[in-house]
Image (tube, rainbow, N blue to C red; front, side):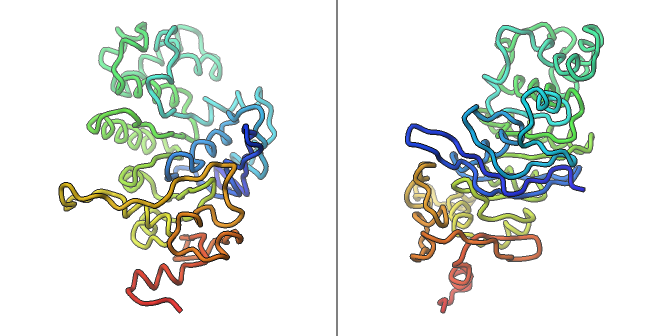
Length: 331
């Protein structure tokens, strides 16, 4: 049995323009100790997907489908029941280290809190474990700085503290939602190396959310490409990178700057803009921006077609994509 099984997950939000689907029929599995990446532009549904897993959606959100964690259904659970899982068996690193910590509590109290809630540790025991955790994630002089407040740490150090909080109870699943946002390149590398090392050390499963293809390539075994709340391509990371097939995935890769990009040359862009959730077409969500689109794309939800074993793409124009890649003309 997989640690996490998500089947036909949909999330409907109420907006000022009426109901809108932020996540549409998303399905995937995650085994114990495995790594999975979610990638796509801002607004594609990555964060809403993981917020649904955590039970942290707005009160007016309507969730359908199934989320089974270690065989236990999470959809429909009360907030009280989810509180017993969050921070204990599922840990989460939020994407903004500058706001993820409470400014009026010491970092020691914040790291110790899940230990006292879920492990019934005394204040002294939780404090000692918090020092060990802060030291493990690389906070200098952890024993001396445990009573400091978040504003007394740098952005990179704050992110390390949020990692310590997420790992405090030794979760089975760690969710990292763009954990290097607003950090410089050197600190980004340090944080990602730390997460990778800790995941391997503790045997946790990892879900890594990012908009950076390089981060996904280096840190996860499997990946989901999301657009318009849907998974448009999925599979082993190596397979997707080597043989990308969905037009949106092709657009993401084409927009990357390369080592040999000529200075001053404009990068390739995907035409158009990400549609509002309330404006998503009834067919393929990418149809309005896709150069391969035909009328049927705007009305038909494409099923997943197998590209390679375990690698699928949701596009009815894969023949045209393949023909272009081979330099021929599709029939």
